[in-house]
Image (cartoon, rainbow over all chains, first blue to last red; front, top):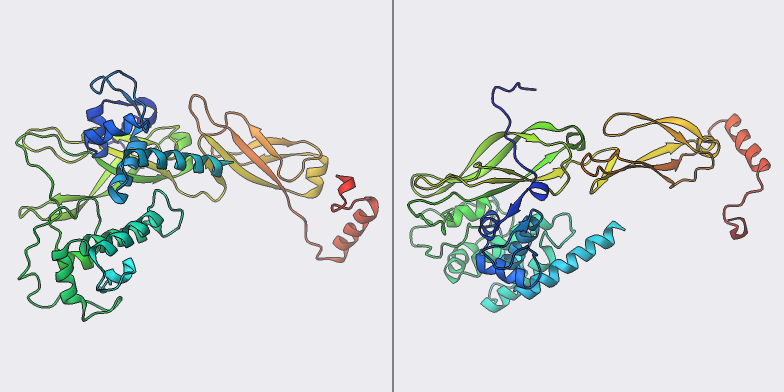
Length: 98
Length: 310
């Protein structure tokens, strides 16, 4: 193993140690703010906080928001459709795990 | 370079209307979307679909493609005709964003895709995403892994080229499949004196010959001889953290799962390790072995298909 001449890069595990603001989440997923807001209103993402400016998203929102982003871009699915697809995908993975 | 028949990819005739092209794309995209499909080649198929659609949905590109395309068949060796590109100015610039195009596509349409990047005087660089495969053992002990990334960068003429970058990354103990590491400042450089973006690394486990992983829990199969399963024994069982001594209770049936609490992926709480017992039959290859099986048959009043005996 190469010794620490160049120290390895380290960073937090997003799902366990990171919370995102709306702006940070949008940047991390390359998503438009209005889309993320629409997904929150449909219950795809569940931040804590009363208004978009105060929202804090849990780390696992990153995976869900990226998935929502890809599905809406690639398949032209609107916000209620995204909510339905994500619910169904969750259910499928639950069923598979049994 | 092979010629790609984009009409064939979408399964539409050459004279299909724009609506028919869109319809065919949407239908196939739903079928092969890698987030939805379990088909092993879904990712490759979806990429191919995206590329075909990027060309055929754009009337300008479609016309250009038709002009070369009529002389070629899918899979033939292809060189763009001399003087190609001269008469076309592809104004639509959205492509290249989000789709990773083939060599064939780039030969025809170039790679001017970096469009959409707004060059404000001071802006934070974009965040980047990449996947990194590690061994299950790395999640048990923590590790330092070299990760190579292919990143699109803009050259002086505004063209996109792919550059390779090597990073040394500390893999923290206890990380699980599907989780992300955030490396601050390792994304795209900012413009002006804006800060760089971040890099997100999604963790995947390489398939392991011995262990399967579900969330925090790890599973392994342990074969036993019939007499070991029937009478009980002590064995050495493998775990990702090294071998452990394990007591097999008497009358252990195949499929029985022994749980080693806290021996799964470390964390708070740690996962569990499940040892799934299997019973392996010794071959009846020699006369002595056959004799032993016959003796068993005599010793047991046993019919595994008799429901009354269950």
